[in-house]
Amino acid sequence: MNSNKRKRDTLNRPGFITLLHSYFLRHVQVFFYSLGQLSRVPISTLMTCMVIGIALALPMGLHTLLKNAQQLSGGWESTAQISVFLKKKISASQAQKIQSDIQRWPDVISVHYISRERALKEFQALSGFGDALKALNTNPLPSVLIVKPKLSQTNEQATQKLLSKLRNLKQTDKAQLDMQWVRRLYAIMNIVERGVLILGILLALAVLLVVGNTIRLAIQNRRKEIVVMKLIGGTDAFIRRPFLYTGFWYGLFGGVIAWMLVSFTMLSISAPIEKLTMLYQNQFELTGMSFLTTMSLLGISIILGLIGSWFAVGRHLREIEPQ
Amino acid sequence: MIRFVNASKRYSSGFDALQNVSFHMAPGEMAFLTGHSGAGKSSLLKLIALLERSSRGQVIVNNQNLAKVSRRRIPYFRRNIGIIFQDHQLLFDRTVYDNVALPLIIAGFSHKDIGKRVRAALDKVGLLGKEKKYPITLSGGEQQRVGIARAVVNKPPLILADEPTGNLDPELSAEIMNLFQDFSDVGVTVLVATHDIALISQLPYRTLTLKDGKLITDSQPTSS
Image 1 (cartoon, one colour):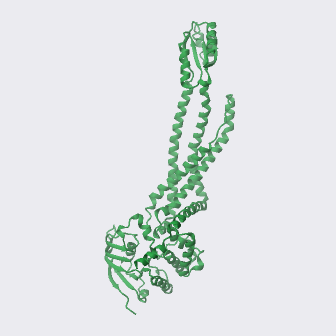
Image 2: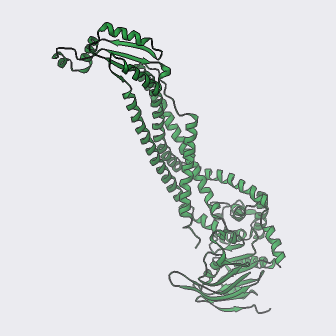
Image 3: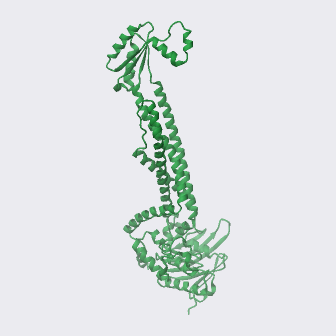
């Protein structure tokens, strides 16, 4: 009897190769089956994907804009200039001599001389304190040399070296690097970057919840099917699979929608941005999402879809047991 | 094939569904399980299919002590049992073929094997021409036979049926019973829970009778 039974058992079970083969086949089937299930309810599928898409497009779009801003401001570092304020007793001719001296330094591109008179005029015109200055008997402003470091010398250390060299000149009262505002801009951008990251994390969490909730509803709707599967020996993995693939599809479609939203937005603002940069005599072209960024967006989106459905399935599958 | 040793089932509500039930069914044996509703028939079947676990005592099925079957192993254990329900438990959004094929898909049979086995099972229950139909378009008797085909399609050594003829007229019920007899004849253990005394009294099989959770009679068939 026992050997008889064993024979029956082997007949009754597919072989290892068959199992492996059907396992992959099954995955492919479920892959398309879950897609088919979604296409049966196109409106609600689209709505879920839209929610995911919008949630992902927001941080992604901000990220892309930020990258553009960084690219734009990246050039500004090279426009760094050093203002050398000369001692007041230095005469105009002396100043011009220093100018031509510095001009010959190898790490300097150009030196621009601003006389005390011109500085006063500019200050009066631009600062709005013109009337107050008139009350003064003497010109309080020093003459200034605007020194542009060589392009190859734009790294911090070389610039600092040049700065201290200029400071050590005996005619110099004060020399300062006019980089402060660029640094501040970078600091602000860092904060914005952090903000985008946090926003991204929060919205990723929202995507998880959206997918989780949608899958939870799908599980409720297919309660009976799950019960039957469990009754006839379906493993948890088998029952879980279609839901995981559903999460995969939500993630993929949501990611594609996010990509479309960001690309469309970039396209629609690229013309006005170009106009704006033209006004600043600046050639700048808005760059959209790179291939790598697009792939990461899709990858993240799919992973979020999978994790969301995984949580939902894990939580709710155990609750459904045949009675 | 099935051995109960002083098995009891008490639900968390305090209700004793089964008390000290002991019996043994040999492989290939066919038996009826009868008693009033609420006597514990369903509870007993649930213990065998591991839908419930016994509170006390032992249940041994197919040489496995069910207390030792972990939750993870339950699906694999259930693949050796064909379960037939009064309400069929068919999936109405799938064709007859897909319903019957489900246990084979779950077990990972090849596509070719599935086709052969499904057709063999449908042939056995007399529904070969209806593979492409949806269960909702079939009569009650036909639906029940789809359920039976699904239960036997992977040739389990044990079949459990819970009121399989509950909604059927006597003629159809007799047909269903004939099917079970056929399975029993080829060595499958069959346990049928039913309260249809009139039907089982005509058939020469062992009858286990439950009353208030206790096994009160275990009558062998009168030799005829």
